[in-house]
Amino acid sequence: MAATPKPRVATVWLGGCSGCHMSFLDLDERLIELADRMDLVFTPIADVKTYPANVDVVLVEGAVSTEEHLHMAQLIRKRTRFVVSFGDCATTGNVTALRNRFSVDELLRRSYHELAPGGPATPSKIISPLTLKARPLHEVIPVDAFLHGCPPTADQIWFAVDNLLQGKIPELPNVYLRYG
Image (cartoon, rainbow, N blue to C red):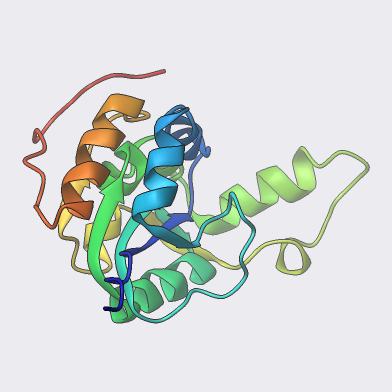
């Protein structure tokens, strides 16, 4: 008899600090258990370049703040059954959205001309074009669950992923405020 295929899981990092992924790594020995229960098919931790098709669950960290992020979010929704907004930048915009007080031109001038070490740089050769505003993931694509926290704790991540791997939708709290 053929073995049941493991759920295909991904993690994605958009506009944020990578703190959510660091909390994911804080699962420590529980990562070994997860490796037995799922196939991690895309993650910045493994440096896979192309987001695959037929992903069962994805944890998406960070706000949508560049054209590249927007394209990735749309690709994720097309290719993934269950999308989790992972951490406060993805769920609310959080720190990433602080830039929304300024125009893109103001941000680029200040960052790449006034404060650039070694002199002015050309941002179009360095980064993807910025969107007009940094936005939480659910403003760009439909999201199935929200995992709050800045970052979420390893225990919160474990609870969510463990439930999803069992085929259950985790009952996550609507608001969990914890910074740093």
